Each structure stands twice: as C-alpha cells, then as structure tokens.
Image (cartoon, rainbow, N blue to C red; front, side, top):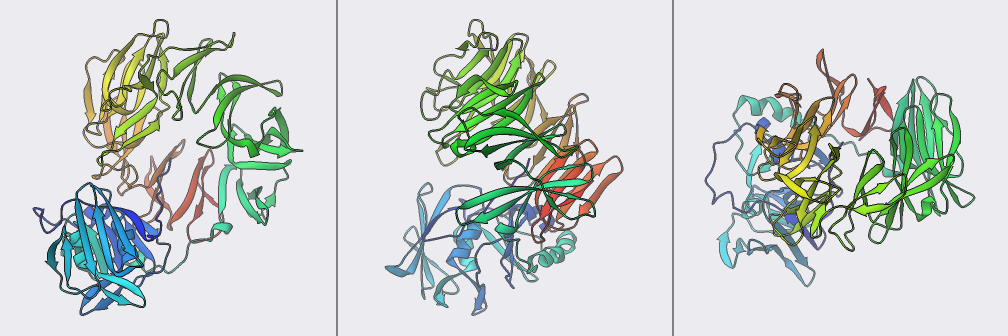
Length: 591
C-alpha cells in the first residue's frame, strides 16, 4: 500500500480546505513541541526554494513563488497562499476567486460556513462577511502578482501562524518554540526545505516491477510522436541494464508477478495475447489468446489464482461506460465466468464464485450474486433496496461518497459482506450475514469501514469512532479492542497492521501499529509517521517523507534506516524492496 497526494496550481478559482474557526476566536490550547504538531502543519522557509512540509511530508510545489517582506511583514502570492491553505483537511471548503476585470480584489468564499473574506490591494482593511477587519499591512502588487500579508490571511482562514528561526509555521494550534523537542528537530526541517534539487523529470522516471535473484526488473517509458511505448528492462548486480525482448506492444504497468512468472498482456498482429515471462530463465511463453479483446480496448484489471487455476479480469471501454469480464484460462483459451459493470471480489467456495457489481451508472441495489462454476448459472441473492460491498459515507460538507470494498467471506454457508439500505440516505455500510439459499440477512455490526473474519471473530473499523472493534460471526458480544483511529489497515500473518494520526485522515502519514489477533496486544512499530508500509517475510519496511526521510526496516534486531533520501516509488518482493528516488535517477534494491 502506499499513501500519496498531489498538489495542483491554483488558477483563477480552486477549492481550498481549511479550518472553520479562526485561530484568534477559538480557545487557545497550550503550545506543544513542533515534533508533536509537525504532521498537522504547513511549513515553509523564509528562503523559499519550492519545497514545503505539508501534513508531515516533504512536497515539491510545481510553480516558483516569491516570498517577500514589506514593512517587516511576510507577503505571499495568492497562488501560494491558496496552495498552502488547501492542504488543511479539517472543516469546510473554500473557493479562492481572482478575476481579471477586478485585478485588485481577492476573495475567499466558504458557502458551507456562509463566510466570505475579501482583500483589496493597498487597503489595510479586509472584509469578513462584509464586516471590516484591520490588518497591519495591505495587500500589494509586486512583480505583477498580488501578494497577501501571510499572518492576516492565515488568521482569517482560521490558522495559527508563527516564525521560528527561518521557518514559517501554519497550523491549527500553537507551537512551543522554546521546547527542547522543538529545538531538536527545527534544524533538520530547515535543512530539508533548503534542498535545491529538482525531482526527476517525468520522462526519465522508471517503474520498478520486481527483483528475482540478483536482478531488478523495471519499466521504461519510450516517448514517441505517435504515442508512448513501454519497455521491460533487467539489471543484474554489477552489470549493465538489458532490454528484454517481449512480443508485440506490451502493457506492462499492470503486469502481475505470481511465483517466478511475470504475467502481462500484449498486442500482436492487432490481437490481444496473455504472456508469462519466466524470471528464472528469461523465457517468454504464450499463456492464452484474449479472443477479441486487446489492450487498446481497455485494460487488464486483474490476474489472480483461485484454487490453482488462472483467472483474468479484462476491462473494456472507459471508466464511465465500460464493463469487466472475468475469464478462466483453460488450455490456452479464455472461458467466460461472469461479467459486471465493476467486479468486486470474487470469492470461491465449493462450486460457486461469489461477487458484487458496482454499477454506478445503472441499477445499484441487489448487486450481490454467485455463479455456478459447473453450470454457468448466475443468481443474485441479495435483497432489493440493499447495496452490497460498497462504503457509503456522508461527508462533513453534506456530500456523499461511494467506494468499493472487496471484503467478502463465505463461512458456514453464509456470506459476510458490507451492505446498506439504499432508500435510507443516512444508512452507511455495515457487515451483514446473508444466507444465499433463502436471501435472509442479519446485520451484525454498526456502520463499519473495512472488516476481516479470522476464525469465528469479525474485526472491523467502527465508522463512528474510527476505532478497531470485534464481534463474533453472529454479531454478539461486540467490543472495542483498539481505542485510536485506525487507517490503511492490512491483515497479514495473524496481525492487523495500520497507521494512526490525530487528524483521522488516511491521506496523511501516521504512526504504524500492529495488533496481534491471538493475544489481543497492540504494539507501536514505528517511531515516526509513516507514508506507506510493506510487510515482508524478513521484516516490516516503511517509508517516511518527514525531516528524517528514507526507507526503514523493522525486524528482530530492531529498527534500521536503509535509505537516507526521499523515496519516490517502492515495491515489496521476495528479495526485499525495489525502489526509485525522488531526486536521483535509477532503480535500486535493498534487503
């Protein structure tokens, strides 16, 4: 898993997310050390070089901005102010408006909070809901750009702002500037922000696939006037890279490693073909023709092994109007198993293959079914007016979001899956126990996020609290087992691994924890916020993009920093990690 986010330039209008209550109006909490508030802040240096720490991660902003000082005040362009403010994911959404016909006016508007803030060039009065508020210094035009007084703009948007030895700190709470913990990290933060290196150009980026033996496999993009080609390369230790000759025009970004085989699809003579590269001997073999489908028609959604048989899920068309078909590979040909708008699952039990359909363009309810693998007969077994295997969430701003959730278990003849009543707009996904024979169902958890079944226990993330809870397969004896917000959770080797942070946002880095299901014990596994983590046979690997960036490994010997630079992409293999760096070309590995 990985957690990443992108920053986009603020144009004439953009959505800004930030706090709802101005810092100067709220009851002030006691200042805390910077090390404790770091992952909830936006930090830039006076001597700005295009880099910022945003919610605990070092980020390269895409445009050059000039931070200037006038009359002893820090002034920032409206685009930089918008980009920085947009990173706070607390309450409400703001729109920033600048119009060419009114070049001296800048407006921040939050329709949900019914709040409007207006700045005017050369005026020391800003209007907050048409009420005047005085500023120490007026917005100005410098070098053709409108710049705002940073402190006044930040406070108007509900943010606390401080200056600390060359750093500008923006957040929801005050930092204890004299704390020993603050002083211990501020120099490292400033060093990272003064890094003048530029990220590797997009056209020079490599995509790691795997490592087998002493060789790394990766993809290069070859840019041509009529399109982009993908080429597969192999680089053994101490040797030059070698391009691997594979048939046709391969689609490699969705390639799948299973055992010592690398499966991928390619177009040969205008026909789609599934191939496998044997990583042990570098031999390519044809696995199956793809009937009338080829990569230009859509994309390879998944390749998976079910009961030692190879299955291929092919997507045709685009995301909006397209659909998916699941095939079983049989003696070099595809045998259609089932199809859906968007296939969730599948799970095999006995002679049946169970799955749900995320059909957001048509009928959404009663979307749970099973296909008889012997006869090919497909039947739904959900209830009308219920939608399954989908998380429906009511957003703070009043909107509704829908996300597929692939958790589906077949146990004792019952199917366990998320479900919600479609006609009730307040109903969110809960775990249901469903009898496929008579379509009866029982709700066994409150609203839940992801869930897992281990033996006779159902573990789930409670949607109301974000905490980890459990119950039995009948829904009795529910109990909270971890009283902290659980995000980015994965079940591996009898333990749940997850990150946690005070914001409750899965997009922000969080400290890594492990909950052992057998003994019910929680253990903190990282001593710093984690951007992404990987559980391998030799230990736990994680990436940190904070003021001590790099790749770390935790094993029986303790914790070690394996890479001391910012990692761009990473992939776990049986031979350790393969990765690329943000500021240095190449593909690397470490174990």
